[in-house]
Image 1 (cartoon, rainbow, N blue to C red):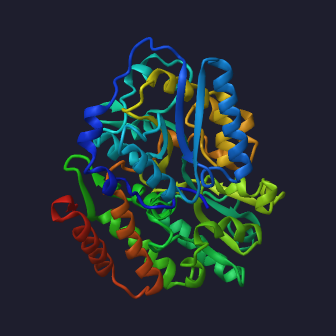
Image 2: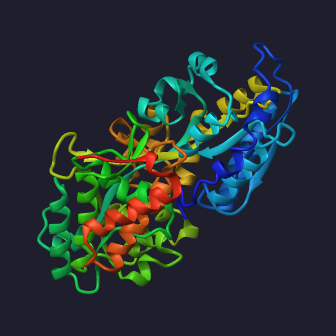
Length: 460
């Protein structure tokens, strides 16, 4: 299910067409009449928690847009399937100005590549004048859609991570409530105690392997550990190279090795199955899982009727920030990634396209988008509203995470890095006897084969 499951496919589709699109792209005309027809492409079956929620939200947006701008029409282009399918469709449509939609919905790690390929319009003049949502958007969120000094997309919702835990299981293991782990060793210690005190319960779910996709593996799991390690670097911005060996990466892999060598994690049959990404919230509801390093979309699964609700989750589930490796500052860590709106450079009416974005980013629409899709609202104003905090407890405790979260790099090499790390963690989960050196070699080999030796580096 959620979120960011697929691999980025933009690179293979955009490289050969950059020149043609750039040459024919329209430039925004200041004061352009807010009339005419514009189009938007979006995910029909992936972002929101159910299709009826998708239809309700988009029908409302269309109605609001056409009501406010009486001479305008919004053409909706829904794409079914996973995020992979939607992003592939976006890439195909953007290849030619004749097929390009005016507005596209995209995953934030894709923004940099699309901007570099000249498919997106720089939005600086719009955001500089905006007073509705941009002033209340944290810098870390803005940075995800900024490329070479220009803003190319507007964030529509984010995913961050925390440790979810079953209070009664930890209490039975002798762990004081509320649980507040300060280091990674505190997590391991708690999992060991849970294993002894709760027979038949999975102590700690830690996503591993490449089958869950580069984004789930990094955004919901390994990336949080890397960001909280003593070497919190995936992509070295000074060299623009991916780090395939460092003390922090070795510590992250070591954490995996400990979890699976001691039998603290889920069985491989569950870990590598087709439903692995969506199992943790269901296992917690069934009281079969004690701790999970998971995403802020989990609580929504316990609220909606179609998701087999868990009415007592509010009292049974606790949450704690993911601690840094040794408790070093800032003391907590999480990755940050999500979805965003961008305007095509081929749009003939960018002012009207921006008017649509303003409607989609209105407080009520942003709130429902967040609640119905399991997102953290990009606006701190909306995130701090009671309607968000109380919708699916304990999601309200995620509200301040954008202040210290580390954005997932928006770089063409990211899916390659995610798959390489997934191959390494999967190996450690299936064969815990694998050495850390061998796990590092897996990452290095994958990265060299896909990106070349000049795109990787090692940090001491």
